[in-house]
Length: 144
Ligand code: CA2
Image 1 (cartoon, rainbow, N blue to C red):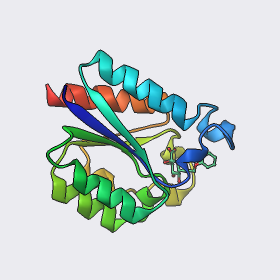
Image 2: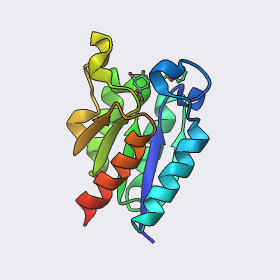
Image 3: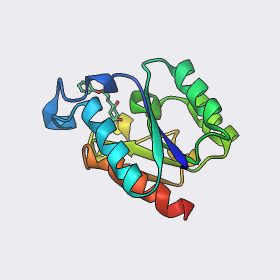
Image 4: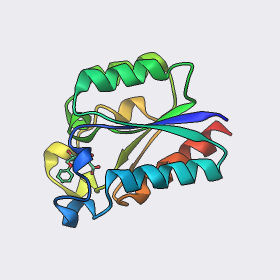
């Protein structure tokens, strides 16, 4: 079965534990289940990873080449800062969808800048945990 990488950046292990008014009450484990179920319904399996470390995220992106058909990526705060993650995404040439649970464009101005968007086929933000399911659907549609 073809496979997708769902990659999560710093602090996303805290989903469902704090700031529910911004990020909802769904835990990252719940989001993993949602991603697995959504992907399976579309004929994909997933690898689901989270790291608080930029270099580890880069290692996951590099290792995805030849293994996964695409990436759904919530780079969290690194979205707004990381040229290194942009370079890694460009180098692997895999279709990537940028994902955010919150609507970053309705928040602080520093969240309006994304280094990930320029290396992505599209961006989904603001739908809570469902942003992930929508990203997987977008990838599956793109890969048809
Ligand atoms: O909305 C998103 O998914 C974000 O990627 C989440 C990041 C934020 O820096 C981005 O601008 C938007 C924040 C991760 C912090 O996660 C927490 C989750 C629960 C409680 C506290 C922090």
